[in-house]
Image 1 (tube, rainbow, N blue to C red):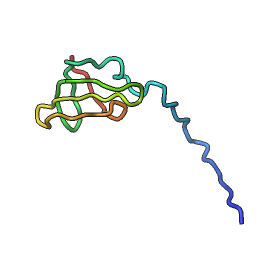
Image 2 (spheres, rainbow, N blue to C red; image 1 turned 60 degrees about the vertical axis):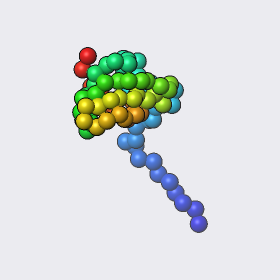
Image 3 (tube, rainbow, N blue to C red; image 1 turned 120 degrees about the vertical axis):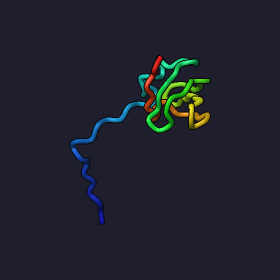
Image 4 (cartoon, rainbow, N blue to C red; image 1 turned 90 degrees about the vertical axis):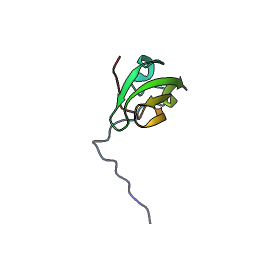
Length: 79
């Protein structure tokens, strides 16, 4: 018995892993003050990685220090 696979027409193409995935990859710098929807206001302490794997270490006023993967973190740069 064979299975027939159909692909929905409304699928969007995915990005290649080498493409920039977040506007903040090049704009975010150490010392920036940012706002995160869940963790609130914080200061960028460190940035590491490249491409889709860029991470920022951020000290939040109430949430402590967090390492966030920038492609998923929705940060607003305040300064």
